[in-house]
Amino acid sequence: MLGLDDVTVRFGDRAALDAVDLTVAEHETVCVLGPSGSGKSTLLRVVAGLRRADRGRVLLGGEDQSGVPVHRRGVGLMFQDHQLFPQRDVAGNVAFGLRMRGTDRAGQRRRVAELLELVGLPGAGGRAVSSLSGGEQQRVALARALAPEPKLLMLDEPLGQLDRGLRERLVVELRALFGRLGTTVLAVTHDQGEAFALADRVVIMREGRIAQTGAPLEVWQRPADAFVARFLGFDNIVDAVVRDGAAATVWGRLPLPGGLPDGRYELLVRPAGVRLTDPGAGRGPRCTVESRTFRGTHVALRLRPESGPALEAETGLRDAPEQGARVGVEFAPDDVVVLGRG
Ligand SMILES: Nc1ncnc2c1ncn2[C@@H]1O[C@H](COP(=O)(O)OP(=O)(O)OP(=O)(O)O)[C@@H](O)[C@H]1O
Image (cartoon, rainbow, N blue to C red; front, side, top):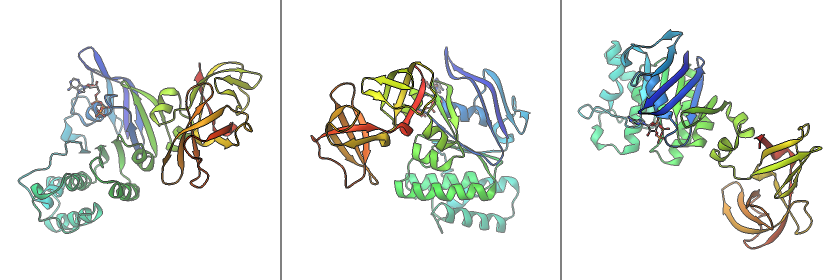
């Protein structure tokens, strides 16, 4: 459906996109994630035709889009600055793309009602855009982008301003809707949870390049490098010297999944793999509980080991030790991930 082939976009001497190759298959939902300034919006703009590539090609349905203007690309856009038409009411905004396509009035009315229901604004068709909250405007913009059933829908922070409950509900509904409509979606979001819930595949960007792409679970379980791991919120990253299947680190010896040749590596220990024991009992370092944070389904602990940097651990709600408590730790081999050669 969509292909980017060696696409570079420069601003001055800085590349906002640096030789990016990416394909999005028909019916696939791909979410692009990355820190601020990593090139996510530029990627969308170049696909939409709002920005010219300095090098490389954008292909839609196999066709080179150089010189094809925005409105001829057959893509639906919903951008952060979701400019609604202020002089039209909500229904007028949502119906915009349908009018352009020549859908009759009854068809427009039906579709508008359906979409407003979907985005949680049933019956709001007659309201003035200026009377809506920021979040409501965003939902209208989403309905407007969906209305003409574009072959590729591009979303830039689609749920950015909405409160959490609504976002979580919409993510589930959107995923179902995209599946039903067979829409191909390229979305940019800051919100990891949203990306992982919505996407068939996530793309993680770093300084104009793709740092990793893969199914959400795959990326979550196997971050490609320390950058991706830290971006996903993992902090237990440590240098290791591996010899005969055992890894020597500042936290003592870490067990390994097995089969790793001798050498220097960077390892990640997922917090779930840092198991608490009685002080002195675990094979890992003895630690003091520096802080504990309630996270709904578990408690996140920050441990201060006798040597080395802080360690993050997770425990069940009932087993969480008090701040200041002394604990021992054990590392679970299944939660040790090799990030690369150190
Ligand atoms: N019109 C512009 N002129 C100059 N530099 C630009 C322009 N647009 C983007 N940039 C630069 O290109 C880089 C990538 O920007 P881009 O907006 O694509 O990042 P982003 O990942 O979408 O960031 P954010 O998450 O903050 O929206 C940044 O360094 C940005 O400052």
